[in-house]
Length: 208
Image (cartoon, rainbow, N blue to C red; front, side, top):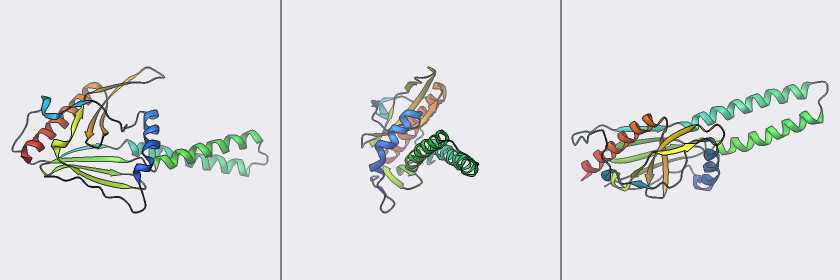
């Protein structure tokens, strides 16, 4: 039976910044961490068949955080260039200084939050479900039994600005937390959801 556990970087408590990170990803449509009503995997019939002889480890990844890291690195690099140009200019207006100061405050604030944004790798095998989270300032590994996890329905998210629709599917943890593993078009999310359900069913029945 798989057991649950976590390993943290000494002195770092990722839970303390969970609210801040959740707010950022909610605004930007990145992976959200919130409870979603779902069915247990064995209550759902996936399109992919259960393979009782499978010993293959099925891997799911969510590297959205890497895009945020790159975006913030680019933002700060450009800000440094603009600031250097302003400092070396013969004359700089108070307005320019105020705008640069505002951008520095915003940039530093978002950079601090992005330091806590994790990329996620989930490995489903006969030994259980291993969840690896890696941020720039913390890391955590957790191991669960497949029977303790469930899969959300396909969730529709509508952009408040342009009205575009995005879909997502999450793996639900027993600690009232969810990790989005698939985002994008409905057909793509549906395929990943079927693959996730099939992998959990296989791992659960192999563990019996």
